Image (cartoon, rainbow, N blue to C red; front, side, top):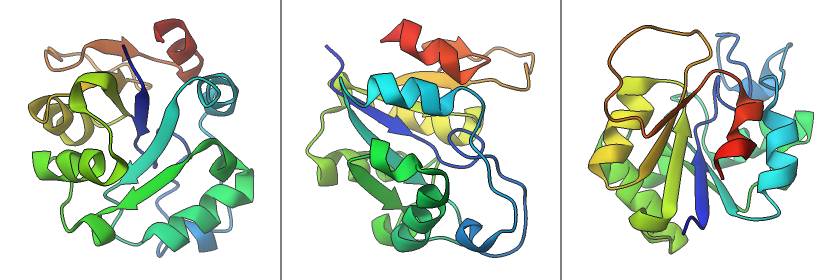
Length: 158
């Protein structure tokens, strides 16, 4: 039984426009289409966590950026590589998120847009995985338990 949903941040919840510096200071920020609608539903049923390997943002900067679009309200816990001391795809990144949040791998799902970074490492750490393949990349994504191309498909999975 799934209890915890762990989301990547850039290009999974908020669009990464690849501007310099922390996203909280970018001129342009935006939701990924369908992410807000899915979080409105899923955050009522599951513990929602956001965990990023972004190099420019720690947790306070991430929360500041999320709050600019109102996304912060849907997450109970926030983790960045700066606080965890590990980066994706290192399985220790995902294990640290689980340990700090009190979640268990067998009841947790990782949702992310980068197969090699978000999905492979999470699978090695024992999580169920959802590959958000918005770009409709072709390939053998064997470590993805589910593949979606639009964030609104997430509510049909859980």
